[in-house]
Image 1 (cartoon, rainbow, N blue to C red):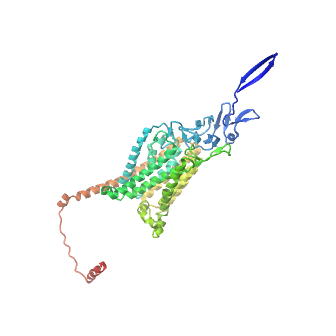
Image 2: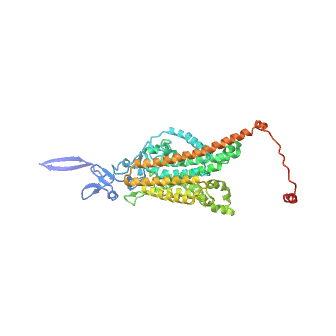
Length: 528
């Protein structure tokens, strides 16, 4: 800004034009009238942020996030989403708050990806991606068909009881323990985690899908795969009515397989729904400004505004049509069966084959136990979602408490008809609780991710071995039935029938008694 000054010295009039630029205090600093310098904003100081005016940096602690909200106001949040931000002391310039983000994240609460990067399945990382990965659609389709086929062939369904404990274990251990490790940990890409992810209907392999995919699109795609799996089974059931060959192949396994895949999809949908409805409110410098709620999964998206509304509608619909009815039916089925004679509950009889497939492995007095297993999932997933601070200790303590209560009740009541199934489920629940106790102990002392990874690896490896033994048991039963079928067909061939010697056996009928004659006279009357 030009300014003119008149100087008078030694009777010499001099005119000087001085050009200078007035600089405002940087974002996050305010003008101090006493010290006549820019100092740290009081709002930052109250939240434990330190400022260095010489280096033009601020330093935040723990998992805090500092930056601008959606309307460019100074904002602070004490708990950045796990694996989105650096943990510990981080110094950066507020003109570039993305310096506190990790794994390629950027934006408000590091919720989005940097320009040119895309989110991936099975991880919180953002990577460079190409639309050529759309070819994975074919691979995913084949994986779905292979999964349904294996369940059919091995008869590894919920009606047998053996896979129920493994499904419950995978549903709990994925968010409760494996997610405690950062995405960079080697265990995250091991075959043991892939095994758990497949049970949870996750892709398993950390891979992007198309260039520019964000968390919003990823959430929609998570629903699509579950729907695809269920569509395959429904198509098989409908096709069995029109094709005798398909009906013979499926035998009577269609409904148990459908029940198994619905159980697998249940936790997947529950997790996605809770993700949709989880939001965060930032602390802003001036509360009079608009401070909208943000979607926690991607805080660059406003909660219940714009495109997020479509996700909310989908979440409410799936909850109303699937999650709530399925949970209620499994939990209250004994009462519903007793009320089925009433006209209001006449629909219960139509669901009886499906309900029986879920309740078959349990003793009659504990036919409500599938509902208890669902409630275990609901309680734990709600706790994980409500724990906004991502406090690992809270998640572990909740997991220990719920699994020990379930373990004690299951062992005390011996809910399954098969003792072998009771032993498997007890082993799996004891595995989760003991591993959680070990991890909690490690966090309390040295917080070593390597030690935590070793504990989780040991837990997953033991369960994987038990799973292989269970699959071998089902495979043996399948092969045994197949050999029996082949032998039966060989005996029923015409050539074998002609070679068989037939002998007539004469049986002397006893002399008719007075009582038998009376019965012979009575039967025609009954028939008439």
